Image 1 (cartoon, rainbow, N blue to C red):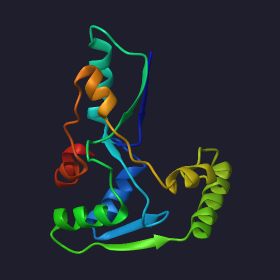
Image 2 (image 1 turned 90 degrees about the horizontal axis):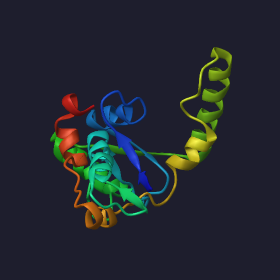
Image 3 (image 1 turned 180 degrees about the vertical axis):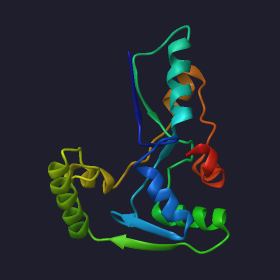
Image 4 (image 1 turned 60 degrees about the vertical axis):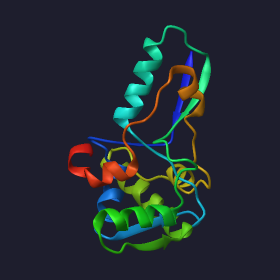
Length: 165
């Protein structure tokens, strides 16, 4: 049995990360958590290929696999800001969102969703997840076991967004 632990998975139909990417490409990067937070991203196509390749392997290991886009150490917010600035050929303003404000927004989202009879997009639990300090991941184990490597970096996805979101 394999357990796959990707961090932030994005791709076509994504309703959670696409708005963030859209804001970033317009020049505004909302920072959640501390400036030192480590982030990792994985395109859904790479995720599907990793699982498919694992299922097709002649011998499989019973392992827990971290998955990411292959950027060593992941990204801190400043690295994301610089990457997006390079992609859009313009500056990107990073705005730290205070935790009390995020918590208030989560409470409003939860209350409005209850009234509408829908699942909330932003909850206190989601805020804890979004502000976790270290989401870095390493593909070393899965690469060693089945020779899988991701094909879509965050930079590539941002440069080719209309096709990859």
